[in-house]
Length: 89
Image (cartoon, rainbow, N blue to C red; front, side, top):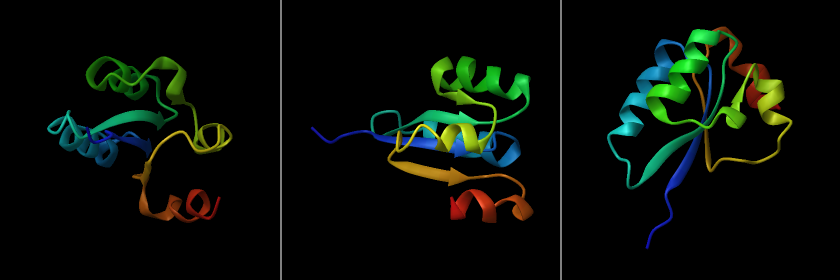
């Protein structure tokens, strides 16, 4: 049996939700395990629509990254000018 790939998404706006939607098409291979997003409605969407556990929904990338390595793959889907800092951390 092949292990499912867990994904973390930093930024759950248009890009992040598009990625989550694409990931949801392959439920036997990959899933969204955690997100970082400041907006409440987007955090609710991650939990309600994509099954992200509430304990893995973070307010920002610093909070997310402080947990250590909790996913197999991390996607930075914030606006372009906000990619560098989380990538370097």
